[in-house]
Length: 440
Image (cartoon, rainbow, N blue to C red):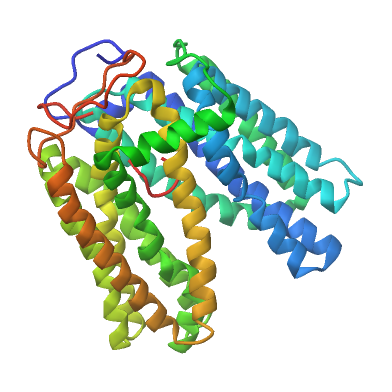
């Protein structure tokens, strides 16, 4: 059962989702945290470059905003299973507020600034895992699917807005005031979560060393064939986001400049922000799960059209269509939630997010290196082809490993406190409790 009063309607609406006070607080805190992350990363990268005039140090600073996900996803995400999730989120935001505020002190060496950013980002995996894990406790049934669509869309919008506002804040006020704004967003997020959500006990008890728990988490998500398949469906994002990694050289090949590059980047984000809420609102749960494989294949296969060397306008259509098909991630996410026991949910989400973020970073680097040898259009087409083959293989595998009740059955929301050692909840039943693509 959900933790808010009232029965869940048979046909959930976005208005009904935002009618839940805890979700409103969690949603607004997410907006502040994501935007704050982007502002800090952009501002600090500019500060390091301004001080050192070293492209290498600037790149290292930007990388410091992503590398902690490797460690955090494996070793820190399960803190949100072993400690009360609200307390984890508040502590993570408070720690990030202090660390970012320390960056504003005059005379801090460049190395210390990078270290502070790295430390601050280390708190992102447990925060995101706790946020993703507590959402099914706040929203039940089909409201969870709609709430997940809202979070996915919000994450994209806040990520883009945060990056843009980071540059604008630096231009208008300078780096240190921009970092001060960022610290304030984390403090406000902590306050919202503390006052706007209710306390819940920890889902599991601490057991074993961090290394043993990390190994157990990997066994959980990779040892179960259904979970592993759903996880890999989520990780297909590595292939169909390649256009973002080579947007500038792709646009340049078409004779475009910064505006064309911006259009390429905007086409993917805008299509995702439009398609995901529509997919969640107008496609029923069983149908969403049935479309997961075909849409995953289509989102990658659409990119193969760049081999025909379309112009800018048609390229934007191709990229938008590919991103829109990526709405299948909603089905993969809700099925993933239904498969993972509550006491292991945060750790599973941490591993999933780690794979997405690290995979995308590696994919962008590989795509950029390949674009120096062949055309960016060829790189995108090859990535799309590889992704389409992988998606087709996963679709066939899902048909064999999907739990009893049929592969088109809507997933059932897991029990709030499953006993230790409990098996994953089957994807069956009439009630359905996001995004593996990016922090969930």
